[in-house]
Structure formats: structure tokens, C-alpha cells
Image (cartoon, rainbow, N blue to C red):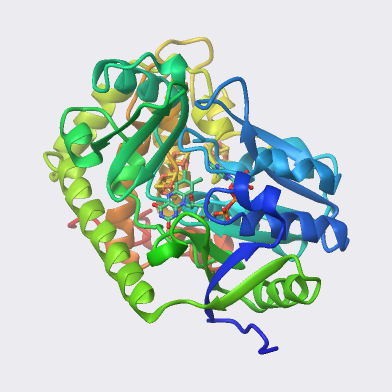
Length: 416
Ligand code: FAD
Ligand code: SF4
Ligand code: SF4
Ligand code: SF4
Ligand code: SF4
């Protein structure tokens, strides 16, 4: 048998019929998670399963291989950021636990940024990436199904995003799809951060699994797997040896289609970035826009608590000498602190916007600044273990420089 190696592009499926039937596109991910538990490669698996309905994604920590099948299938309303929950709910108590985790693009990016901040030890993690065209907020999905599809959302048994369409299936066998472009032009559809997202195939993970590039009679029952690391290759080889998955080389035509689809998604994301970022080009206009938008803040800290870049035990926004206590809305300093600390590493995961009770477009604003900083300094968050721009400043050197020059202008961003 030819060994799987890093860089290989494969078609794969689970040998177990029950997993194949319940899995989204062949059940490869579920079969690999199960194998990792059975072979003690990991102590636990952290992923999502369907909760009360198809709009409800519940994070689960699983240690018994028998329970893994509950998690098979894709949940397109599953907008949770997996690594932040993993760190808060699991690794906080069990820092040395070896965990297999399923990661969308934003999850994989968060893993790297959190690892840089010593919140996650990547040596203990096996990351199975899933390609991601985007997720839809549960409230939006219900609204869209009611208003655009003319269907009661409680009768929907399956949702999927395929070939640019949002598709629903109802309990009585109805099958309806509407183009995502059409839905989004009318204010429905994916979260705004997902529209701008370019992390469609998470190659930072050990394996990147998806349906793009699967063609012919394999559509729907086969997973396209890109082997992204030595750890990923080892997992595939062991799973093959144990007979839990079947693989074959991906069809060259399929590889070409997958490449073209990824490029088309980048183009679409650029279009949305232009749309979302335009109109606030000038520094003063931008500041005014940010101040106006954040003036609705009720200081609930959800943006801080759910951001993968925020990790400090003592957050500066809670220091009374920086932000006056008990004042609503808080001084603008509250938001300035966050922009200063987070913007260079923001991964555009959308948590700070989606969970904001005041519906402030936090993610759009932070992502807009992050893209400018990336243009200036070249730091791309979430793709590797390179340190962010601010980490390059040595505090003692910086204090000496400040004393010598009398200016706090570290980089020549502003005109003298
Ligand atoms: P399965 O065996 O069914 O396992 C799926 C795993 O994904 C399970 O462990 C489950 O817990 C986990 N999971 C489900 N929902 C989420 C979620 N929201 N966040 C994190 N983990 C989750 N592939 C493409 O090629 N193009 C796409 O545009 C695309 N969009 C996707 C969008 C979303 C939101 C998701 C979750 C997946 C998407 N995929 C996409 C991947 C595809 O749907 C399958 O997950 C992939 O082909 C693996 O199939 P499988 O049968 O091997 O996975
Ligand atoms: Fe998927 Fe990107 Fe949205 Fe994350 S931000 S859910 S990777 S489209
Ligand atoms: Fe995600 Fe918002 Fe933090 Fe950016 S600032 S990483 S979008 S939570
Ligand atoms: Fe830390 Fe700054 Fe985030 Fe507060 S806002 S948690 S101080 S990074
Ligand atoms: Fe303010 Fe919204 Fe952040 Fe809450 S989540 S602190 S309301 S910006």
C-alpha cells in the first residue's frame, strides 16, 4: 500500500456504513475522530453536535468512541469559535489533555493566535480542518427560511450550502434552494465576517477536508482530503492500516475545480471587503465612524470574553485609571484599548459582533483596521507561528527610545 504523505490530495470515505450515512460527505472526519480515540492518539475529541434543532450547534467533549457518531454532519449555523471554548471549558481545567478538534478556517486561525499567547499547546492538538464557505446566524437562518423560502423553519430537517445555494429540506420531502448571492444582496445569508473571509481551506490544520473537488458519482459520499502536515499524514496512514477509512488519489479534474472554486471565493470575499470597508478611508472620518458605532456599548464584555486574541487575566479595560467605572456608555478608551491590543492579530472570526447585545459592528471595524495593518507591516494573523507586530517591540528598548526621542511614535504611521 502506498503511504500517504504531506501534500497529498485524496478522496476518502469511512468504511463504517453507519458513519458514512450520517457523515456529511463520506464520514471521513467522524471515522478519523473515532479512530483517534480508539487508538489513544488523543484523550478526547472536541467538536460540535446538533442541539435542540438544526440551527443549534452544541460543543461537546467526547471520550467514548461510541459517542462520536452523534457529531457527524455539518452545521451551517454553527458559528461558535471552537478553540476559545476549548480553552475556557476544557484546557483551563486539563491543560495537558490531548485533544482532536474539528476546525473551520477561523477556528484554525484562532488556534495559532492562541498558541502564540500560550493559551493552547499545539503539540497536544490534532486539528482536522473542514473547508468553510460560511456560516449563518441561527436567527438569520430562521428569518430567511420564513421570509424568502416561505417555509416554517421548524419543519426544516436539513440545511446545506452547495454550489452557491442555500438549500433546505423539509420533513414532508420539500427541497428548495436559493442562490446565496441573491439572498445576500437582499440582506440575508452568511454572517458579514464570513462574506469577507478568505480562509476557505484551512491548511494550517493537519488535514483539510471538504466537498469541493469531489466529482461524478462520488459527490455526497466522498471527502476531499488535503494532507497538510506530517501529523496529518501519520493519522491517515494509521487509519488506513487499521482499516477505518478508504482512500484513492483525487481526480485531477476535481483538483482543478477545487482550485478554481477557492479562487472564486477569494474574489467574492474581496468584493465584500470593498463594500464593507469603503466610506471610512480617511483617518478622521474613520475615527468618527468608530466612535459613533461604539457609542451604543453597554459594557457587557462579551467582545473581550469571546475574542481569541484577548486572554489577559487582568484586562486593561477594567482598570479604573484607564476607563472610568460605572459609566455607560464607557469612555471611548474602552474601545481604543481593544483596538490597540487586538487589531494587528484580529482573525475576523466575528464573535465580537455576533455576540454583542448592542449589535455593534465590532468585527467589521477591527477587520478593517487589521487589513490596513497587514498592508503596512505584512503580518498575516492565524497562518503560522510568526509573532505579531506588537511582540516585536522590546519594552526596555522602547522606553529608552522614548526617553531619547521624546516621541511615542514607534512606527512612522502618521505624518510629522
Ligand atoms: P463528517 O464525518 O460529517 O464530520 C463533520 C465534523 O464537522 C463533525 O465532527 C462535526 O462535529 C463538525 N462540525 C459540524 N459543524 C461544524 C461547525 N459549524 N464548526 C465546527 N465543526 C463543525 N466543504 C467544502 O468543500 N466547501 C464548503 O463551502 C464547505 N462549507 C462548510 C461550511 C461549514 C459551516 C461546515 C461545518 C463545513 C463545510 N464544508 C465545506 C465541509 C463539508 O461540509 C464537510 O464537513 C467535509 O466534507 C467533511 O465531511 P465528512 O463527511 O468527512 O465529515
Ligand atoms: Fe467559515 Fe470563514 Fe466564516 Fe469562519 S469566518 S465560519 S472559516 S467563512
Ligand atoms: Fe474575532 Fe472580533 Fe477578536 Fe477579531 S476582534 S478576532 S473578529 S472576536
Ligand atoms: Fe487583554 Fe487588551 Fe484584550 Fe483586555 S482588551 S483582554 S487587556 S488584550
Ligand atoms: Fe460593548 Fe458590545 Fe463589547 Fe458588550 S459586546 S462590551 S456592548 S461592544
